[in-house]
Image 1 (tube, each protein chain N blue to C red):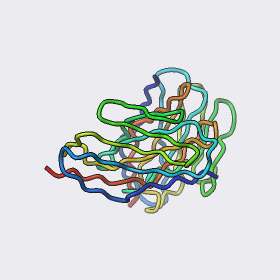
Image 2: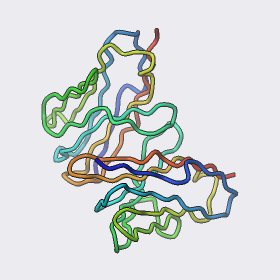
Image 3: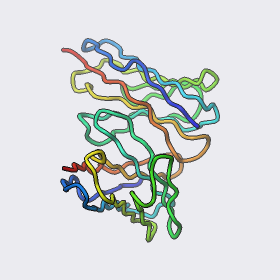
Image 4: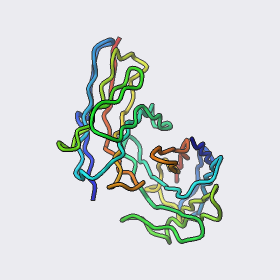
Length: 111
Length: 112
């Protein structure tokens, strides 16, 4: 069964500094990875989808996937206070469409 | 892409009652998924619903407690039976097209 863990649990960064979030998973056969943002228990906002090893950039958000190391990360360039939210990593179960979520990283961007 | 709508946005109900949450897709989708999210926690997959067949439930979720219907390729209903305060959470429906996954806006349920 796929297990997904995120670190750190919480992170505070200053506005403009790079924020880096980590996600490890247990099943290396997964081929579908996604980072979401959730403000105050509202809806899910998809930030980046990545399906193969390497890097994928969407605006200020960059995901790095290394399936051999069972690791996917999210880097937020020039974070702003409005980026303060919970960030969730989602990993597919094998090559299917069911998804397992990590427990989230709470990001606080201070002005 | 797929747009998913949920109704109601939020609901408050008394313990012991049942309530229904509807999910509508703007186009036909093969599978619909239901997730539960307790406050400040992760989303947990509850079940997968395909048209014309019984939903398959993940560990910890049962058909008796959370019956799901999937009468056609654009619609699904999640029912919460005998609601308890411990069922208070946000319920999301989800689907996919190709490799992309889509989520509804969520239904916030409070059980008193």
